[in-house]
Length: 139
Image (cartoon, rainbow, N blue to C red):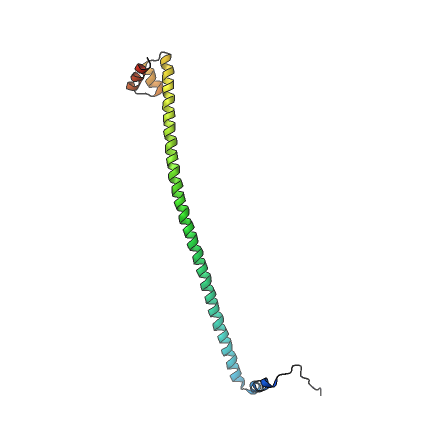
């Protein structure tokens, strides 16, 4: 027969526990193994829960930051919309005043060419009273 050599030397302090395990009841060892794996599973599950809670907290912080940013953007949009409405009103007022001054210039030219009150009303969009007043001012 072949003689077995020891590959690994076990210190004397560990000899007793190793011998005890070798001589232990296999059912007891199986129960200990299942208990050990059960504990590992419980620890793993708890670690997963902690990691998931941390991830959820990070997501919540991100959502809070996004909500704050959206609120600021909404405020900016309202201010921009208000400014735009004021600009539109101002442009409309300028167009009305420019159109009115163009009509008045046209009325002056028409008066120089001898236009009647009825022609001023028809061509310049003036009321009859405005056309008569304009004629008196420019005659």
